[in-house]
Amino acid sequence: MVVMKFGGTSVADADRIAHVISIASARSASERVCLVSSAMKGVTDTLLEAADAAEQGSEGNARVVEVLRERHLEAAASLCQDDDDLPIAISSRIDELAELLHGVSLVRECTPRTRDLIVGFGEQLSCTIIAAALRAQGHDSRYVDARELIVTDDNHGGATVFFEQSYAQIKRALAGTDLPVVTGFIASTANGVSTTLGRNGSDYTASILGAGLRADAIEIWTDVDGVYSADPRFVDSAFVLPEISYQEAMELSYFGAKVIHPYTMLPAVDRGIPIRIKNTLRPDVAGTLIAAHTSSNSESITGIASIESVALVNVEGGGMVGLPGVAGRIFTSLASAKINIIMISQASSEHSICFVIPDAYADHAREVLESELKAELAQKRIERVAVQRELEIVAVIGENMRGKPGISGRLFYSLGEAQINVLAIAQGSSEMNISFMVYASESRHAIRTVHDAFFRSAE
Image (cartoon, rainbow, N blue to C red; front, side, top):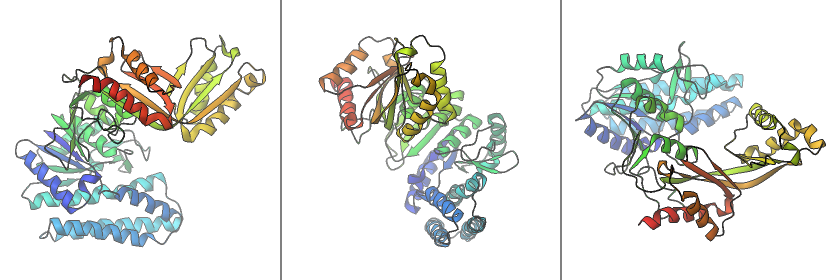
């Protein structure tokens, strides 16, 4: 049993969908397949924009709805010429969408609950077409609405999944079905109210289905050959990694690699199900296997990733030394302001605490901290709250770094030789990740330098 998830670029138009069907059909000849699909490329963004426009009372959504109707009907006509029911099904969904948007425009309000309902139409439309096209090819395929399978709370826009209840429904609903086509991204509460699983939600759907069905593998089909050793846009010598561990994939994803979002992997990780990243346009390429244990990597590091547009906040002052509770107050105040901290570094002297946050929150973070630490600043126990912007985090990641002397030496020697200034450093006790901060203007040079230092020497 394999769960195959196809992203928006994979189902962008009739030709792409036909290619997806050929891939799934070939696989289904040898094993049972459950197919998960995103909306057609760009449709989710269009629906979000339509919801925003309707909330403002715009009358322009009628044209948007008709463009969506034409796009999906055109794909359906190309793939299923003899299916008279398919155009009716598509138009019925589009009409429902139009009525919903019209209602939003009348009340000038689009609640999170309504937004989830609107944005879910993309997956419903694409999966309706794919299931019909598979039937036209002779498969006993059926459209399956994930809202009948995955149960969540009512946190609209990024709902929390109730796994055991969902697994029971998945197992019951999909047992014995030949090539079901399941809508990614959407789910529902126990009362049947539509919810969504957040961005990358279709990957999450695939992982949940894989865990519920106890699949042998989960495949994420996208528009790249797999997980790269570094961003190939910046590093010409970057290469596809044949295998990485779950932990390495999570670290790479957290630090900006376009792999698979960490939380979407959790159901698969919990059940020990391997995940493979594949390229829809190049299905013969092996891709990258993500599993509990890997055997092929003999390099000191696995890959390099980075996070752009971050700011470094530094709270410093001699009066902080030995002063209990300062760090707790700093991080509690930021948490209350819903400011995410990406990286933390503190000198053993306790003279300063520096941490990294998204650049968009830099000014707000300074205001929050200056308010929280007002008394200490007035007493000069804390000298200042300083912010540096236009920075980037670069992370060197790999399980083989554990217990291996010389990794940090090689890393920072190469950066020094390249005249790249390092502003802050962080390393966890797991020894799987060394992160450092550089100016954004030097980030690409830093990534290329580190990649050459660890991989070119092994060529």
